[in-house]
Structure formats: structure tokens, C-alpha cells
Image 1: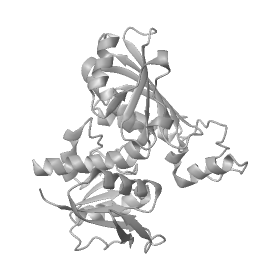
Image 2: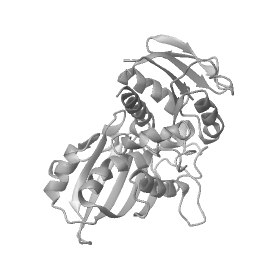
Image 3: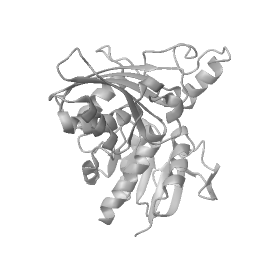
Length: 335
């Protein structure tokens, strides 16, 4: 198998450092890694793969003559908007975790367990988009159910960890528990829930809610699917939790539906309420699977179900999903 040259852009940030951890665990066929960050972080020394790497500054010509095959981006939307096309033009395939490219019709939006067949679409612009963290875990649950029963309507209610707001959001909870005022959020997050993730739109929805709606339709190739969402920031460090209400096009039997979920890739069923077994953020933290439980029929519609799913938002919601895209991309190249 060919050995590939891989770059991590934004290597010093919260997701970037998680990239390094996940890459060490997944052991891709890589001959050389290159770590990049902004001028502010360039020159930092990072331990990785048993060596010490010096972080390089990301500039317009930083990728010239390096022969990078895959570039994992976690550097924010504006950085991705500027640099992703430049890096793609150098010959690398960019896998971007920002929101910048997700809804571009020429850029595939990929969850490897769900739509790996979309990956070849990178040839349009040299870019693959990583979905929003809250969308990713929902897709792992919904895809097998969509295939089995057809989807009529999806209602999301999310309970999202502060790490999803970056280091500043994380520290708002750490410091808020000490009685300090928030620096990232508009209100205290310690002992509180904020029904406000990202900016508010003219519709009254937040941008986070609209992302979930639009991305669900794109990933599942169901542009007319009825979807709505309410997204809430909660005082949890790691792990997004989601209540998902699904109305199906066809009838189902609950035992059969549970069996469908048990066979689904990337998904672990934790559903034994009599023994207090259900997915929890504290158990999902620093793991890769999506966990689903509280599986029960919705008696208010002809064919519907309520589900509770949890995943680590920095791993499966960002770094792990992007690394899995890289693994699948390499598999397709080698096929």
C-alpha cells in the first residue's frame, strides 16, 4: 500500500489536538505528517507519533512542493474559505471541519458510515466537508432507519456540551463554577441551559438549528424532508446528547427496529431502562461510537419513534469523523 503525506491545519486548537490523538490511534498509512497553525502558534513544539513536531505557519505558499495528499483542516470558517482552495490547488484533498463548505453543492458532505459513496465528489473542488457535530451523530442513527422505513418527519432537540464552543466555551463552564462571569456565552452556563447556539436568524431559528436541518437533507439526499430543531447549550464538558423524534413512511415493529440499529455501523445500542441503562455523555466522552437508547414508540402518530443518542462531539463530532473520511478516501484510492 502506498504511504501518504498528511497535513493537519489548526494543529494547536482543541479539535486539532484531538486530530493528533485520533491519528495516533487509527494509524493511517502515512509516511510523513506536517502540522500547521496560525502565525501566533507557529514554532510551537508538539509531541506526536513518538516525535516532536515544530508547528509551521499557514501561508499561501506553505504547501508548495510538499506533496501533501490529504490535509485535515480545523482552523475555522474564514481560514478554510481562504486556504482550502489554495491547498486543494497544490494537489491535496482537503477534509474541512468548519461550516464553510458544507452546503456548497460541489462539495460532498460526508459521514463515512452513511454516505461514503459521496466521497468521489471531492474531484469538483478538492474539498470534502465534515458535517456539524450534532448532525453527524444523528445521521449514524437515522440512516439505517431511513433505509428500513422511510422518513416523513424528524424533530431534533439537542443538549450540547460546552466544548462545542471551543476553548473559550469550555473555560466559561470551568470558571463559571467558581462564580466568574462568562467570556464566551451571553449568560452564565454553570447551572444553566442556553437555548442559543450560534447566531439567531430572521426566522427565529439559530444558525446551529438551520445547519442541522440543511445538513440532514443533504447527507440523506432527501431535500424535501420535513425537519425541525431546537439546539441547547448545557453545562456538560464533553458529549452532545440528542432527543430525536422520527415519523416514518412505513410501519415498523419495535423489536425489528432495535435490531436494525444494533446492526448499524458505528452505532452502539444502550437500551435497558429497567436497569437504568441508556446513553450518557459521561460514558461517551473520549470514545468514537454513537450511542442510542430510550427507544420507544411515539403513540401520537401512526408510525413514529423516540430515540436518545449521545456522542463525543470533539471525536465523532469532528476529529474522528474527519479521520474516518481520510481512511475511506484512501480505501477508495487503493481499490
